[in-house]
Length: 261
Image (cartoon, rainbow, N blue to C red; front, side):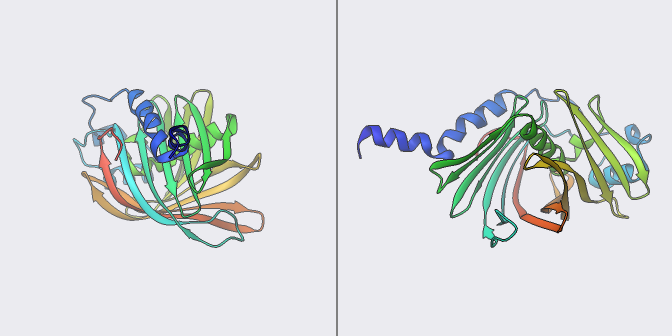
């Protein structure tokens, strides 16, 4: 192969050039050192939120600094399209908020990320030619929401702090508020009787319009001393009904291992 053509192909393949972005993510991390969960610190929280932390965590649990995971699942690119198989890997850091997700189907590779307060979504046809590139304020909001909602995989990251608060709604729901980089985002979180989070609802931008969004989580399992859901389903709540576009099953969790698979 012509050396120039080979170099060009390497630059186009997301699985290769995303490594540097993963390095950028982990290099920006500021570890939360010597922080452990203490159940006496949650007594002022709404009752269903206390129920959740008592279910998901035990006293002395170390705070999560980072997470990497692999998932399988199915995905739809439009309401009238068929489901397609998807596999992905995702990398999170807690402080500051950040993540990279790389999802691959037979038709495309998508890279979703939030690093240094900036969100970005890129999609590559057959993993080579970029056909989508989105960034800006609306993407920043969407990616920050993704990071916050997917913190169900990192329960200590849902504990209140200077940027994160919980407000009571009723015996089975509460509002989670988060402020970062002049962005204010929220979820209405639903809990079951055991304390498991079952649903997170908010508004995200879809075609320049704030639209209802719902994430439903299930199949809780113990990982690294924490109860986390292995299954997640994502849906848009449209005027003509619910449009579910993603169903993921997490197959592998690794906490506090800040490096690429």
